Length: 139
Image (tube, rainbow, N blue to C red; front, side, top):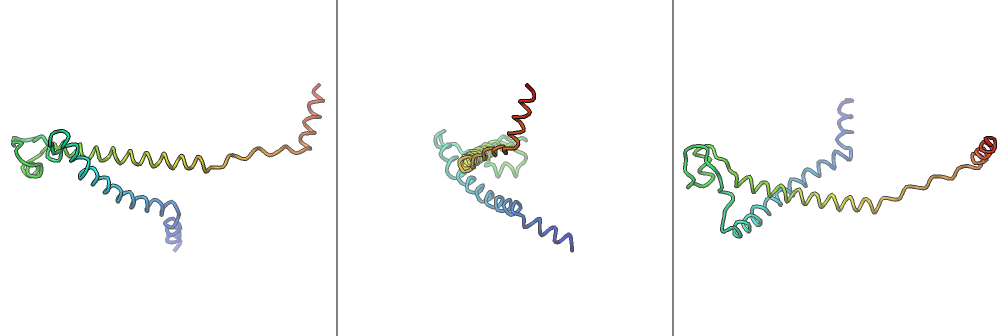
C-alpha cells in the first residue's frame, strides 16, 4: 500500500498536474498553428510565388515520373517530399516564435512582480561595539 500512496502523492503534485495541462493545451495549440500554416499561410505563399502548391512538391526516388500527386507517388514508391517538409518547417518556426514571445512576456511580468531583495538587517549594537574595540586595540 505504501507504493500506491507514494504514487498518489507524486501524481497530485502541482508540477505533474501543470505539466499535464501544458501538454494538452500545447497539443491543441499545435493543431491551431498547423491549420494556420496549411490553410492560410501556405496558400498565400503559393499564390505570391505563382500558384505553387508546396504539398505536392517531391522528388521521386525511383523511375516514376513527376506527373502524379504526392499521395499517388508515395503509393508508387519512395519519394523525397520536400514540399511537405517546407510546410512542417514553417509550422515549427511559427510555433517556436509564438512560444518565444510568450516566454518573453512571462519573464517580463516576473521581473516586474518580483519584490526587491530585502536590505541586509542592521548589525546589532553589541557587535558594532566589539568591532570598535577590536579596531582601537589594533592601533
